[in-house]
Amino acid sequence: MPFTFNADLRPFNTFGISVKAKLLARFDSVEQLRALLADARVNELPRLFLGGGSNVLFTQDWQGVVLLNEISGMEVVKEDEHHVWVSAGAGEWWHNFVVHCVDHGWGGIENLSLIPGKVGAAPMQNIGAYGVEIKDTFHSLDAMRISDGELITFDREACRFGYRESFFKREGKDRFVILRVTFRLHKAPHALHTSYGNIQQELERQRITGPTIKDVSNAVIAIRRSKLPDPAVLGNAGSFFKNPVVPGALARNIALEHPDVVAYPAGHGEMKLAAGWLIEKAGWKGFRANDHGVHDKQALVLVNHGNATGQAIFELSEQVLQSVKERFGVELEREVNIL
Ligand SMILES: Cc1cc2nc3c(=O)[nH]c(=O)nc-3n(C[C@H](O)[C@H](O)[C@H](O)COP(=O)(O)OP(=O)(O)OC[C@H]3O[C@@H](n4cnc5c(N)ncnc54)[C@H](O)[C@@H]3O)c2cc1C
Image 1 (cartoon, protein in one colour):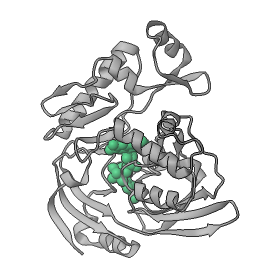
Image 2: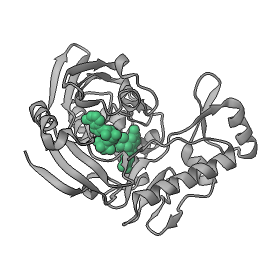
Image 3: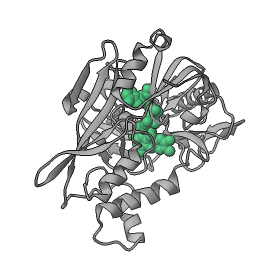
């Protein structure tokens, strides 16, 4: 089984942070994973399972083993008149899976086109974009309990999905490795979600009146390319913070001073505020010091202009948190996993 000792993790995280791991190993089957976990060089060390490294910030060397999940395969496991159950290996790239489904005419995840990372990490934070989250079409996942190697199937309820949250990000953290995920997708006709963000405008710009799921996917791709920095060009991990949910009274206070505040009802009298708007109003958009900074088009995205350290980006996130708290009385929470 090939190991890399003292591995540079720069190619394995989209922030492009150069830190070392004691050991790096890959697995593409459950058997290989079992063999790795039983290996004397691995089982004493702290373990970190990584997909595409697009939701992590390394602030220091990883004094353990990094295990890259490369379990592949996509297959239809069941179908009926209206639905198809499609399962994908955790090591498949998420966008490739979306394209595969869209090309087959299976609807439900087209709004999640172009989200970086792998299928196995998608349930970790219930990835979402343009009004859709994976919980909407999620059916089940297979995971291995690391303590005893037992294979366990989790249904949607067991995953306890929330906004950028799941059981695996909280109580299940570091206890399970996700191996395979199954979605229940729609065969045509399928209700499209085009009212969120600029999807409708993008479709109109392209003169599309009766969109297909492929058209929606293409519109989302076009919007994302125009708005978000490509990690291959500028290191980043997408939204660094979650959109905060605050009491309605606080949102109304902010709106009195700033009628342009971006806020949506979040139920129970609470409001969800756009974290990017708060950060921009606190003056951070386009900020740069040495190689760490805040993106100049989307203040929610912290960036590495080249050789920033993870520690510098983390400290910048502290400053952003602090200033938003002082300015608006709103406590931001990080979405990215800090390591
Ligand atoms: C430009 C850009 C745009 C983005 N846009 C969005 C967006 O619109 N919506 C959104 O929700 N997210 C977005 N993200 C964040 C990111 O793409 C997702 O969180 C994605 O699911 C992370 O996948 P990954 O494979 O890279 O995970 P990694 O970064 O490799 O891992 C993330 C966490 O999951 C754990 N993990 C990974 N795989 C497994 C596994 N198989 N079993 C157990 N634990 C595992 C890791 O240990 C880590 O804690 C964006 C990121 C970037 C860079």
